[in-house]
Image (tube, rainbow, N blue to C red; front, side):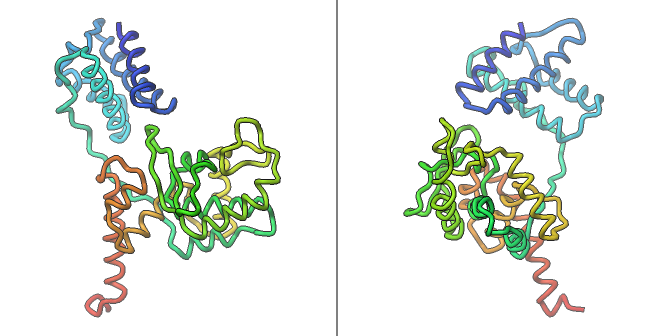
Length: 300
């Protein structure tokens, strides 16, 4: 019976929510865990027969398995998505997950790079090499637009508007947004397009991707990860950084500079302002450090 529910849920996630294959797999895994738990007693109640108490016992079972609070919270998110589907398809009349409380998870502040460290990293590129022009354009775009790495590798020539100073992004859930792009990023994109990209043999079906590898194909996320790791070593930056560090740095520097949080939310493509609010915590640390450094009352 639950196989039928899972099949319907999968189709709903793909067609109605337009989620990536990775996200769909994660959601299905969460619901399969619930189904496995329900089968332990030999019975398999239908979704409409489940209560809040059933889900609380499921949560206790996850805890006994040794799952972290973060993993439990993610699984609960998947379960809530499943019951949203069940309501939409009228498989249930009440959502038992509405009052289900996820375990509290510590909110870790993301690593960021200072403006000086960003400059160090970019300065480590040898611009006498053709691929470094492309890499410079990539990193400038990451930092100036605050992109996710998946958004970067999926950038298209048709979604690049240099006259208007914007790029079109297809973000999570296939949602589209327009993001301003900095003049440095546009400068190096134009150099890359004129002096490198137009001389490449581009593979069929890859023509619209903005950034290409040597084979004339779309870049991989792994390639961007290794590029940044390698440059960090060359620049002598002893931080555990990744492509996402550029996104965090973009948001942090905006908030530190006094940018409106709603504007930052829009540029990052966050569905909820709560997600963006983490950068206000970073900003408070910055303000406290500034006070301690410059205010007479804080000087020893």
